[in-house]
Image (cartoon, rainbow, N blue to C red; front, side, top):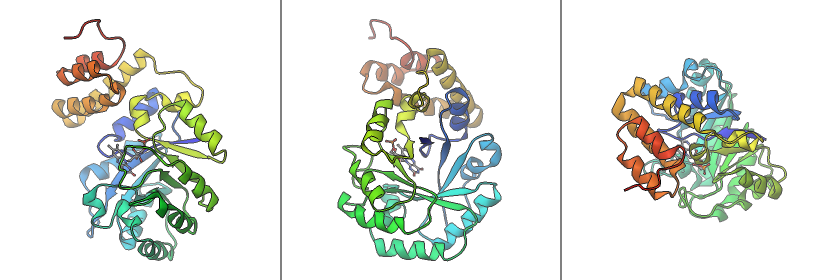
Length: 307
Ligand SMILES: Cc1cc2nc3c(=O)[nH]c(=O)nc-3n(C[C@H](O)[C@H](O)[C@H](O)COP(=O)(O)O)c2cc1C
């Protein structure tokens, strides 16, 4: 089964991707967070750095764009091709109101007719790289999904990653795994399951329910347990030494790039995922003033009494 590391804006940058691949591996494709396309097609410095081949050396990566303009997307696909990549992704999943109210991201799911004309215009020309899409299963309700799935099945996408929630559901609450079965029934080509895969058992349950599952995409599960993909493939759990090396390398990388304060802020944010619901670890993490205290809060056993 193919495993994609989901794009997570502000988290999964080149430093995290390279460090993850070096220490834990198990990932087939690392997805890049979206480039927000504009009329002028000028990208932010961090977006240019993120897609640069040297930032992604040795990795298979999938750049992503957020736009509702087929010409913009087409021009960006040429840029992706010039950067040396052969596949790129269109974001139809971002639920942020600032994005959706401009009709971008999962805002494009609101009106299937507009989405159809967008895709017709896009695919009326030969594209320089193959295109995949990352979508939600509707804007307001999962009942929108059968029509959307039928629509997406008509176009030659390299794959269709499906976060099995609606826009309104954001990132929490029950997922709708039945929507993935609907995608298979409607003939969506190469569907990729995404949403709340946190353990190897979750993946086994999915595979038992949908034996046709070719690929999965994992985001927060990999932040909580960076060895998750390796474990899904039958490999070992993350050892304490590996976890220490992981956090040290991330901190060093971010400190060299952004300075100490930002690096500490980023590492603390990341470490909230492995802390889960453990209030003691969270409290220690909040109070931590350096990387060693952060690691002490999250890796290994805690001292008996924490005041
Ligand atoms: C902090 C954060 C940033 C995200 N940024 C992106 C993004 O840039 N592009 C995208 O398609 N999805 C983005 N997502 C959604 C994830 O890729 C993924 O679809 C979602 O978290 C559900 O998968 P999971 O339950 O495995 O985390 C983001 C999610 C989070 C939590």
